[in-house]
Image (cartoon, rainbow, N blue to C red; front, side):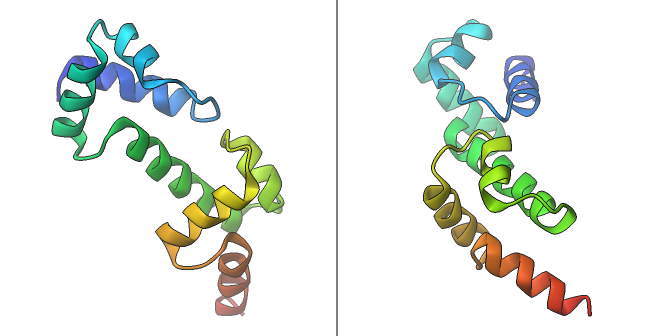
Length: 110
């Protein structure tokens, strides 16, 4: 993998709770925004925004199942300010709303 994309991924993972503009990521790895997006997509098969959304939904799934945090608290931990937007994204990725996913997992484990 390209070292510049590895550096950008490291920043994304370390600062998942921040909404870092794509142009800032590109500047950090010394690429133009357009070239950064093309290279990022070539290396990960996702755009930077899609990757951040994917990573947040993956972490949200773990937090919903493995913690007692409310959906609002989980969204805040992941840097998503709008709870309804978070719920819609979660449902797209996992097939259930966050609350529905938690209930489904609780009943499945009994």
